[in-house]
Image 1: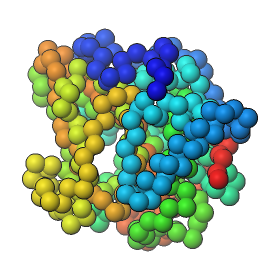
Image 2 (image 1 turned 180 degrees about the vertical axis):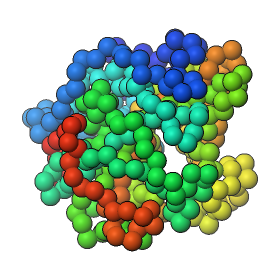
Image 3 (image 1 turned 60 degrees about the vertical axis):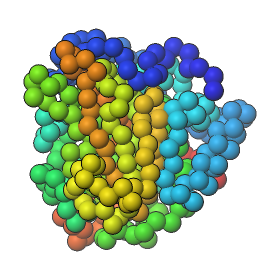
Image 4 (image 1 turned 120 degrees about the vertical axis):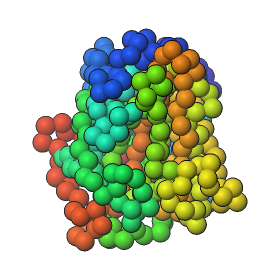
Length: 347
């Protein structure tokens, strides 16, 4: 794979502090430092159809899709994601700026070690488009195999800013995911509308912090073994600072594993896979209802400085219907002030 011109820190450990700014981002400050912005753009995959790189990208995606159909999860190295996303139309400069979007995350309402932004999107095969939906509280429940102190609590997060939504790498990731799961049959979840052609996608940009001297211990999955109430889940590594190399390992578990137990308490015979996001754009996609999963802690490489880990976490499922365990249906109204309309190519 050719190197990414102008993209620094591809190995995911970028020195001390948070983007070189010391303790900023810990204990509720949570970034909000305005990085230099080139302005939002809209990816138009239809403009790429006369570029040979587009067809190379589609060939790579279809190969990965075959593996996804067979194994029900795929892990793609970042160095392999770059030509795929570029072939779909992601701009060169956005590969650098996507590493800065986590600076804009805001306080998590129930976790002191995490900052988040959040957006809801509709993937619509009929109109062949991805559109931004209006904000709605986010809820996961014990009945969906999510057992934590905030299970069943409606949570409201800072909304995805234009620097995140307008990044063509982020938009290409949404399109990539849609191409991977298009037409893939999954076990149905209760009270999701599988007669609908539309998909609701919830995208989190999450920064996890660890600062032991402040009593902050970053847990990418405090809930232990769990599911995410989704049909297809995607996790993408954006970068880290001062994070120990053995941090944040993801394990895939058989659904027979007990919900809520920590990784070290699990039955090794029920582990179905192990992946480790370490490099820019390392990407995992899996059928959420066919596995449970867990993620180990974030540790500091140097205890004198905080550690951070930046991810995109993208849940996609059919729309909720009346009577869903979360207590509400999905609103499908478009976002009134931050619209997005990305054309989508489907085979």
